[in-house]
Image 1 (cartoon, helix red, strand yellow):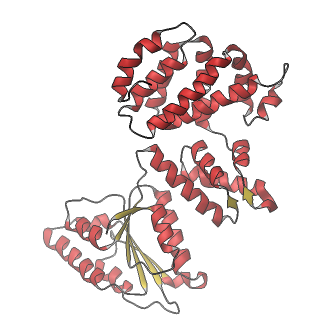
Image 2 (cartoon, rainbow, N blue to C red):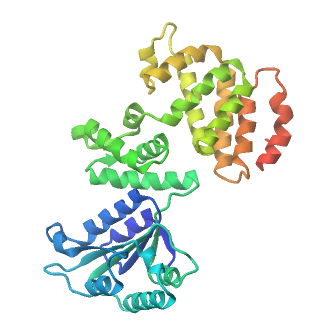
Image 3 (cartoon, rainbow, N blue to C red):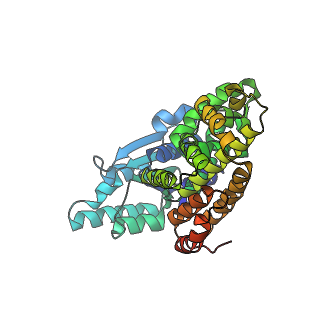
Length: 365
């Protein structure tokens, strides 16, 4: 069967209908744990889980043992979930053994037990083998590998955040889920930790808003781009480019960096709007932590208002471009930083615009 994401699987099992066989394929242990928990919660009553949830490993248990259990009606329970981990081990052995293993799986999947949800797991499988071809055709393949594309990871993180909040018995506003995904760089384990903190903060309100997220969840990425503020204030394009390169080396994604920079520009504008003599606490109340508030108060007066306003517009355009059809995000961001560090009367960014935008795969505006 076609592969699907974890969010698609969760939506599918919410109906409560038995899914005969699933393959959890990928290296993200958190996603696999999440799937296991949801499958058990959906298909097995809490009081019967001790005997209606089976756990086997292909490294230790033979296909006969696992499939035999799958065909055995569970005691005092209408359905059972059987987890069969390390199925990659079935690729090993001589050719006759591998073919025999695949044959037994095919025979079971052609006529699966109606009371069993068989969940096979592997970090990866050789797509050339009969095992992979069989499982891809006869099971629901769930992709448990983090996407290389930040937008895809963010979409999944938003869905997972809403699901986690439900488990914690709190309501998470959609825009709050989006902010939480962005602030945590779509890290699911951290999202769970932050939600537990937010749920405690929400208390009897039982609802988490975007304002709660902005107030309590510190974004490491947002803090890192504050180092750019001094470079923007001084127009130090060379240092800004070196800093940008370091962010790419650390694995930061272009879309995430643009979002963090846009947040920084908006906060600098908000700080400029504070009355004369504003304190660190005044800046903190704008949704910044202490160290970023100090940087904002230091650099906001040094950057022309026009430069900040234009920067917000440029970053908005960059966000749209990066989410659509930019061939080279790195080149596009270099072009963007050149423009952001340009001062009035400085033609460097505009002179470089054509060549850089061409390398980035976008037309000039």
